[in-house]
Image 1: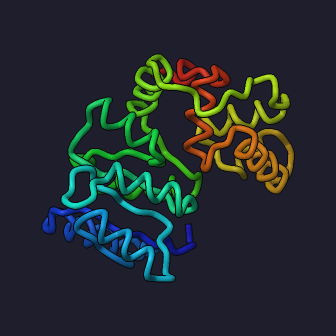
Image 2: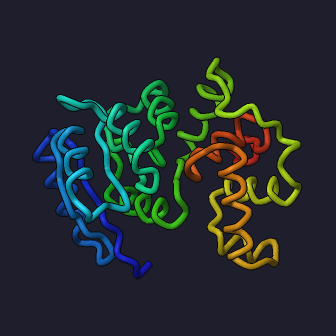
Length: 225
C-alpha cells in the first residue's frame, strides 16, 4: 500500500504511546500526526486542526474523557475517521461496547507489532478488521444478547446483489476483490456499498458487519471460528 496513512495515538501511558509511535513510524506508509494523553485532548485537536487523521489508535481507560465516550463523539461528528481500540482489556463487555459505539477494530496491548501494523493496513484498506475472537464476541454479546437492532429494516428490503455483496464484505474482502469475484466493476461494488450504508442507516463498514450478523444475513459459523 503506497498511500500514506495518517495516524493519531491516544493513550495516557506515555511510555507505551512513545513505544507504539516508534514502531509505527518505521512503516513507510504510516505518519503519526498527533499524540494525545486523553480523549479531550484529541477532541480539541480535531476541532482546531484541519489536518485530520485517517485512523485513531484509542485507549479505553483515560482521564477526563475515556475511549468509549471519545469514540462516540468521533463516530457522530467525524464518521470518516476510523477508530481502532488499542487496550489492555480483552473482555467481551469492553469489546462489544467499543464496537457498538463505532470502533472499526479492537487490538489488545499484548499483540505483536506485526499484528498492529497488519490491523492498521486492513482498516485503512477495507474500513474495518475484526479478528476471529472479536467476531465471536459480536455474535455472542451483540447478536445473541438483548441489544436492539440498529435498524428495523428487514433483510427482504435488500436486493439479492446487495445481500451477496454484504456477505462478501463480512468475509473481509476488499471492493476490488468483490468486484473480481462477482465479475463487476469496483465502481459498481462501491455503489452497492453506499446503498447498503444508506438502507441500513449505518455509518461505516464495521456497522454493516454488525447489521448483517444481527439480521442473520451473515452467519459467523461460515468463518470456521
